[in-house]
Length: 256
Image 1 (cartoon, rainbow, N blue to C red):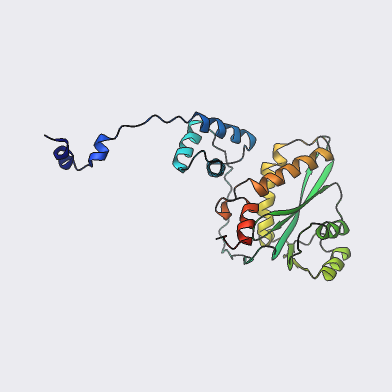
Image 2: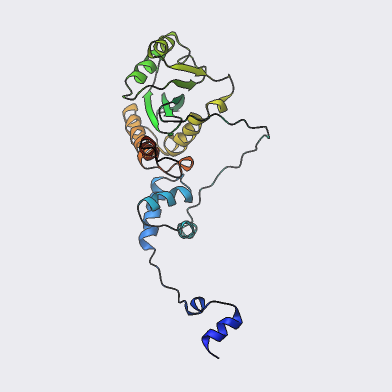
């Protein structure tokens, strides 16, 4: 019986019958994935795949996931109980620089001294436009930093009701700069969801990964992480593009 006839009877194509698997050398891809997993221990396979795809090492997500499982790089996640409630979607800004969000995160140095980090992000591009690292950050300091950010100020900044944000110095600055300060309701951090999401990533991937010997070292490592977050780290809500790349596309009118 001919091969054509046998394939027809078996119900398979001739290309399937003639296929011979080819050995694929994944050593370079494996080494790079292990290196990235060591540098960013809280990145899952989707984040690692996006970085590897940007570097031109892999295209098929199933291939990177197979290697991810073979290397046992899975990230353990804590399961948390969830309260069922109706969700109300937060309105999204329509362009870059339309609305910012800001909030504080606290941590401590190795000898116990506390310090704070003010995070300011663009709600449209998810880009971190400003970070202040210090032991004490007043409302006047926040106002000076916003003015000196080097970016065009937005129409609105979303924040909570902390004393720095409700201070007279920041209020006077907002009136002078023509920036509306939108205060969320007390006890409703979900109303400031964009910066809260950033705070979680910042704590998990930066603060929890380092012991800071002094404030100078903390500023250096946090600055390095912010540069990585803005220019290299893929963002799942931006089609796995880094925020700075997405911002450039948005400026050209090419962002989805």
